[in-house]
Image (cartoon, rainbow, N blue to C red; front, side, top):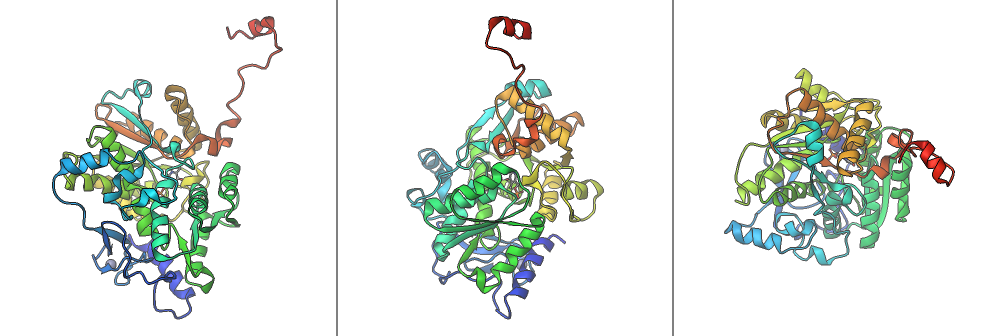
Length: 448
Ligand SMILES: *Cc1c(COP(=O)(O)O)cnc(C)c1O
Ligand SMILES: [Zn+2]
């Protein structure tokens, strides 16, 4: 039952749209003549049914998720490679492979992407990795998480469909990314988060001047609420990046795959470790890797894909290990709040991809998350948020278990900035000593 998550969202939208025929509600303009680069339609991941480009996210035939279908550039891969390399130092260098207008880089947007791929030799030495270890550091994005990538694509779709308000249900980072992107583009924003998130994420979600609504409930409650809002006249003209714009939003994460391969010298990595909340990012990184092979931009070889979750919200990891279906977690309890989605829409796809590639899904507890955050900071000077601690923690655990192969090239994703989750490490990171301003006091502290 891989369609459960989205299907329930769609049913919710349908029920609350009081007799309206369409799921979900349309935007303020007809979507039939929309032009979004090489995107030609939306197509169902399960049954292949095609519908015109528009703010739809669920197949009405089978309730499967809709995805963007393309007519990708054909012809000489060398030319395409040169064109990409000559493009802007942002995700827009891959515009020909995305559902965006050709002049996207000229429109007001945050220009995310093309973040550093850190060659992590000191971390590799500590972990015993000999095949090459890299950290794709997406804390370098404009609002300090990878969410700027999917939001930048959703923004173009929102403009194309005539939406006037940009919205989302968020575990924290998405709210900030939507607020910032909307402000830059001159759209209104109204974003929804579960109450009780980290202070820095709440402040970031509010500082860009849009409306921020905290809901007394879990992320899954917030998401259900947003599905209802889409089906209601109250939500008229609203583009929810991760709900009715989800097919477009999701494509943004392909750029992580593109960048990693380009930065490796147009090569696929052997192994890649990706954090999972809804699973959307992992599914699209896999898609991005396959597209590069199809386009002839990289040589095909096996890539083992690993998914990382926090023990306190690990529905996908649990299902992977016990071989059963993904059962929702009602009360997530983890310091990795950005990954605290109890009912992940793409969970079953994550399991298929990890299994099919010879990878795995694993989880780590809060103490292991903090340890991994400190390890990455200490060895590579990269301060990751708790989600990055989850990913590196799982990498370490799977190396120790002999599941991740230390002799293969391995990319670990850091999807967010440690400054967003200071509380996780604040109590155990501070001055080595507090002293009087004198040499004798410093000598006495024993730090010279
Ligand atoms: C949202 C988020 C994720 C997970 O993204 P999904 O696509 O929902 O799996 C990972 N890391 C960070 C920092 C996030 O904010
Ligand atoms: Zn279908």
